[in-house]
Image 1 (cartoon, rainbow, N blue to C red):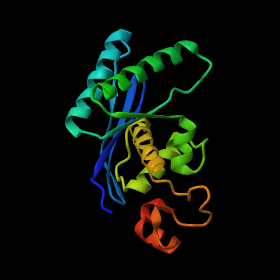
Image 2: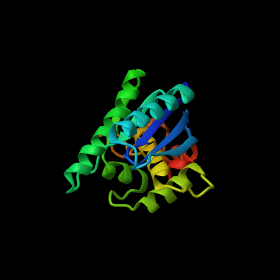
Image 3: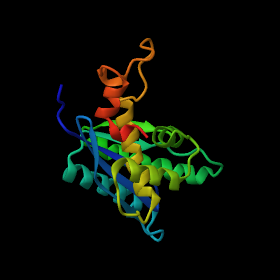
Length: 192
């Protein structure tokens, strides 16, 4: 059954650099629409940066009209102040998505890395290289935040289209295919 193409907006939140990435999912094909970063001057006060994050996410939604929004959850580190700032950045990005009526999904950094590379402890460079391979991205991004955001969007897509069979259907191919050969033929980008 053919499904309507959809766009997923992924965000890697940050208070100095926020990454964003948009994927187009058209049936079995996944391709990059756009990726980039919002660079925020450390000289701006915290509230002005939050305002710019909200504006950027809103502009991306208006321009690309995504159907869903995925964001990376803050990493729980030792610095409480950094966590608070990152949580605020994440919150305003989520608010912009909710204001636009998008469904919101949140994924831990470990979950995103596991979904993309198979290793929850992968480096940012490993994630970037895998995103280049999976999506055929030729250019080397200046900031890992952009490919991180794209990986959040791809992780969200994989949650809707898992590579592994559902529990109780041991050994059967996902997506209702006849067999694993059929699945591999229909999904060359998902098999590595």
